Amino acid sequence: MAASLQLNVRSFEPFFQSKPLSKHSPRLGTIRCSTATPQKRYTITLLPGDGIGPEVISVAKEVLKLTGSLEGIEFGFQEMPVGGSALDLIGLPLPKETLSAAKQSDAVLLGAIGGYKWDNNEKHLKPETGLLQLREGLKVFANLRPASVLPQLVDASTLKKEIAEGVDLMVVRELTGGIYFGKPRGFSTNENGDEIGFNTEVYATYEIDRIARIAFETARKRCGKLCSVDKANVLEASMLWRKRVTAIASEYPDVELSHMYVDNAAMQLVRNPKQFDTIVTNNIFGDILSDEASMITGSIGMLPSASLGESGPGLFEPIHGSAPDIAGQDKANPLATVLSAAMLLRYGLGEENAAKRIEAAVLDALNRGFRTGDIHSAGNKLVGCKAMGDEVLKSVDSQIPAAV
Ligand SMILES: NC(=O)c1ccc[n+]([C@@H]2O[C@H](COP(=O)([O-])OP(=O)(O)OC[C@H]3O[C@@H](n4cnc5c(N)ncnc54)[C@H](O)[C@@H]3O)[C@@H](O)[C@H]2O)c1
Image (cartoon, rainbow, N blue to C red; front, side, top):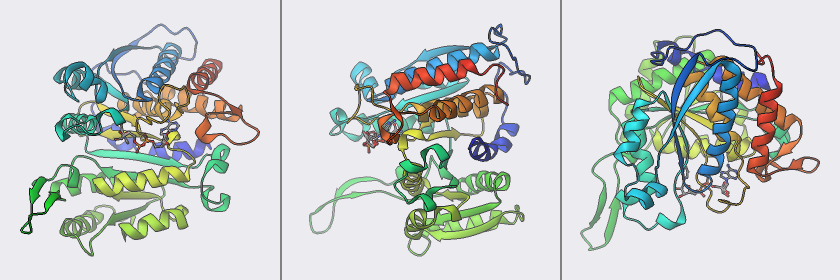
């Protein structure tokens, strides 16, 4: 199952090869001792956010600290407000100090934002607006969301075992365009005097081309199969999407491209998810399909994500939200955030060994039978967020030298 994780993460290599290294220029060797003197220092902006965000970020921070100490890495953490907590503190969902700190750091690790308390705020004062502004501000247009069914968790999937086992797919979602950002948008009144709400799904050629190239590169490093998901039978923006993805395909003759309408893709994901290797899609379809894919794996609490731009720090976050129903109860699964920290190390900082150390520790904690409520099944040990973090820390600590 480590191989399964590896298969996904290998997909990122091309972007990071072309991505400028951190200003602290990580050295590529491994320090195989538990008391390594820090030789590299990175600044990480932590954005705990709302709900379970602070709980899962606190676990990930400890895991990063311990892993760093074993790998000769020192982290400087700066914690900044975002989302509802920033609204309460400063009155804005993304204070300019937060964006500025994020831009100046080597990588950004986000918990989650949102909650009932702010649900009825005006749009510009909603926590979600802060997240969209953050992605826009960091210019991270490519969101990569792996969804792999780990053998340890196959029983947690809502699908039958024979459908779920072996699923290993990657959703490449366009993140800074489409209907979430398109203009015009707003509220108005139609000719009958009815109030209307409207949004615009719009994509320019350059936006489609750059995400398509990332998706083809990703597929090339995986099983060489790319499925582009759109709604080209109805939407003009999707017609252009299909035309450009097809055009970019000529640069990647070794990748097998197929197209699928989004309604069919939603159905196929639960009917036969193993048919997919890499999926590329727009912002809104990617939002929905990646959540659907997450359920195949057993829990939304297991899935990390990486959001990357052409330069500057990447944004790493679990795909789940702030889970207000379990916030503050020590019930959250911190593993999606811990695995996001592993992605941060690999793809944000080029620290492959440290990333592997964390991934191996997560698998080890699962192998030892520890489960949070969302992935718990009979015969396993039910633990809370903090205790799961402690088990991962024990596993990190016990791997000397780092698993390679
Ligand atoms: N990136 C983000 O920060 C993000 C993403 C999605 C939703 N949200 C926000 O989160 C709030 C709640 O949204 P939602 O309920 O639709 O989605 P959610 O992901 O917060 O929760 C959906 C379900 O999954 C469970 N869950 C989520 N993460 C979990 C974890 N780590 N461990 C165990 N169980 C977990 C929750 O308890 C809930 O039952 C909303 O305000 C929404 O806008 C934020």
